[in-house]
Amino acid sequence: MHDASGERARRNAWRAGLLVLVVLVACFGLWHWRGALSERLIPDPRLNQQIEQAEAALQRGELSRADGRGAKELFEAALAVDPDRAIARDGLVRVREAALARAARALRERHAAAAETSLALAQSLSAPKVQMQPLQAQLADLRAAGSDIPAWLEQAGRPGTSDAVALALYERSLEIDPDNAIALEGRRIVLGHRLAQATSALARGATAEAERLVADVIAHDPAHLDLPDVQAALGEQLAQVQRAREQRLAAAADLEKRGATERAATIYQQLLKADPELAEASAGLSRCARALALRAQAYAADADFRAAAEALGQARRWSPRLPEIAAAEHAITQARLRQAEAGTRGVDQKRLPSLLAEGQAALEREDFVSPPGSSAWDKLRVASAIAPHSAGVLKLRAAFDQRSRHCVTQAMAEGRIVRAQSCLEARILVDPTARDLPQARADLAERWLARAQERIAASDYPAAHQAINNLVWLQPAHPALPALQRRLRQAEGQAR
Image 1 (cartoon, rainbow, N blue to C red):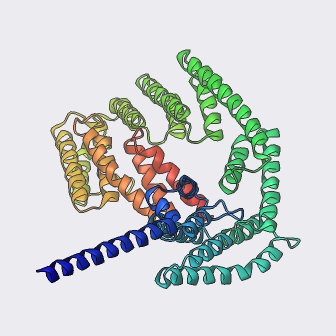
Image 2 (cartoon, rainbow, N blue to C red):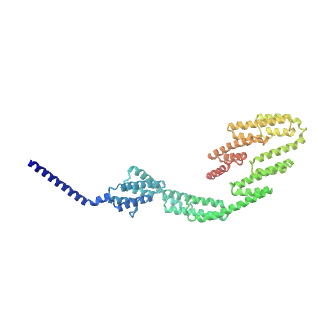
């Protein structure tokens, strides 16, 4: 019993000694690693500040800086203090990705030097080869293309090289090397010449030419040092031109109101010569043409056919496709027929049956208005002068209207719009006030619009002009007409 008590006492003493040893070792460890533990439990505020500065630099796009204040350098400094700081390692990964994105963007913009710098930064941060190699290949291609730049610059600066050729060579060089000092200076000089030309054009009143030259300079170098002064002078002259234009339009409108149609038309024509797209002048000239067409009808009603022909000819020169011109032509024809009726009635009655038969035969051939002299319209016109109200003439007139109407419908269905145009013109000769004519005009106008667009796309400009002329004749106020005419002029200008 005594031995057992002694054995327990020894074990307790051993345990107590072991416990004391553990406590001593723990105290020594806490004392030895007190700095590291304090950093884990209570982070160094200076380290946190350094990481915040690195994040801010990354947000600003300052990926690397020689003074050590770039995102890369600040994250690396934080890792040097605390190699286990995950946020600093993640920061360096984000810097690497940003460098790769910047290199790709620089390559798209053909900035070889910037791309090379960004790729070097990404490589220093151990960017994967699968990301680096395609970008490095693009950079090599860009560098190879840049080997032609010296030859281009030499050619651009050679005496006798035109400004247009030199500018194209400078631009080609800058596409590959945007910071090339020689190309930048050469472009500046060439564009300076164009601005000088614009200034000269302004001095002689050629505002449109100056506007074109200034727009060209802006397209190549909107920050050109000489541009603001020329733009200011151009703006002032454009304002003067606009004021003068408004005054002339007002004067022409006043002349119209006072019945001075020819003088008003002269002003509108002068304005259109300076600006073919001036809608107010175009509309004014059409109004003048309409007034003369109505005047021609009045002359015809008074049997003054010479004055009627002169007025109608002038109206046709101003606006050849105006619908009122066709109506005036019809009115003059009818007046001539009425005048001739008195002298021919009874004398040519024997010719009437043959005229009606010949007219019917021409209709069977669909020779509505041609050939001249033997067309259905010519036969009907002469027969109407002899006996305008006879049953045979009225029957031939009705047949003419019916067959020309059918011709328009059939030609439209078959896509033969030239034939449809001819048949519609024949219909207008017989009955220019028919109720279905506006819709027929509109339908055919849409076909000519599509034809004009198709011919412009195919670079067949003569056919496009013809299609637009037919469109103007059918619907002179068609909403798509101004844009279509502008597109044709631009296409022709580019083809020259």
